[in-house]
Length: 457
Ligand SMILES: Cc1cc2nc3c(=O)[nH]c(=O)nc-3n(C[C@H](O)[C@H](O)[C@H](O)COP(=O)(O)OP(=O)(O)OC[C@H]3O[C@@H](n4cnc5c(N)ncnc54)[C@H](O)[C@@H]3O)c2cc1C
Picture 1 (cartoon, helix red, strand yellow):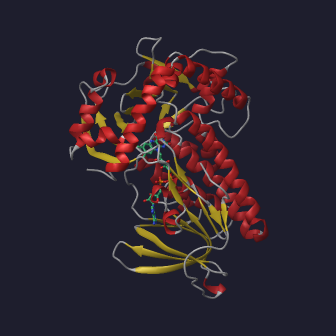
Picture 2: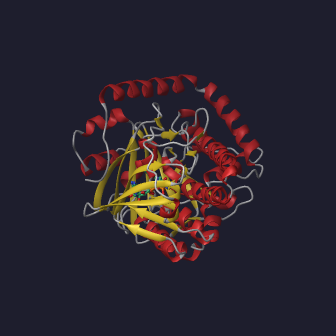
Picture 3: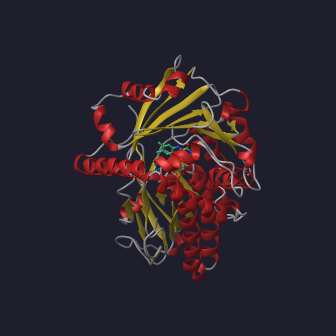
């Protein structure tokens, strides 16, 4: 994901020098999503004076409702496990369409290699993000909503950033360190031109909440269900209050057929997959229909003198394995250590940031290998009729649970899986070539045309 060096020197546009006495905060964090609230809370707990600024007001809608079991130790360390239990629906596994079993096959998290937690949660992000933001305030963070961080500047003494409030007023905040947790807005990524889009992984997502959608029976009731279709993939995420989040991630070429249509186009897309249509037979949309770009990108570098990026502000990969919130909170935990230690000992900063970057890169690469092959014919066959050899299936479930940073016998088994994938692919080269040619055609056409952009309709 990353290219070249990860760390920059003293950077930013014009210096904005003031006296050291102006440094009102130790750390300014831009963005009050999971990454921002986590890093802010952990830094405040270390005794630092932290300002957390969120552009919107909680509770606010956000996509990314399916969590992973590896989130659990982070919730415990942060002290929010009970709060998550109170608002989340238990998710015991992920299910995929199956070629060998009628209907679907479930990958149960309890079957991971040395599982950390046998389940995760599905959450409404308005509730989850608000809970994390308020929790940060309870830890002593000065948490402000309805203010936009802009024009971040670095000088030898510290960092300055403008806060623009909803009524248009601006104020300059000075701090010793700056953490960008602005998510896909990539505040510093855009300001410092660090962001590179991944040309082969450009798609968009259409989604809505549905009432009266059919849930899976028994223990599978909390599963995320994933369906492939010719133009992308579909998710069904059962939420705590009986709602079902349903969305389609579609290739750009297909989206051109939308021609301004909104929820009807989503319904038409969903009804093209018979199993999904069946589960939505008696369902109706509740609330807004949303459409958003789903473009993969990575920033490089991801840290420099007195600043670092965390969560989606670093990189975004297709959300098919629900990795976003976990990676955001994991990187935020690591970021809190880097920032606290760097403030104590500035000479250690570059080394700590380097380690931060390397670890993240390794985790992202482990996920992205699977993510970007997931819709290929060979991977579809392997996921729909899994064969267990040397506990490779358990290792894949560990990866699906988010276990990509520890080595619990997962890594070598994932290597075996990659070998098996290559063999399977050789056996179905005709199908693979046709699928690759189809995708290349779509990418070419989308780059000569363009697709949808942001937000809800
Ligand atoms: C279609 C789709 C489906 C997804 N599904 C899943 C899923 O099922 N599971 C999962 O784990 N992940 C999923 N994700 C990914 C998930 O949404 C993100 O990875 C996660 O929200 C990242 O957290 P974050 O804190 O880094 O960023 P965010 O949650 O985006 O938070 C960033 C915050 O910063 C604020 N902000 C932005 N700019 C500024 C500024 N200048 N000043 C102040 N505040 C600012 C924003 O308002 C926002 O609240 C999905 C993503 C997409 C696009």
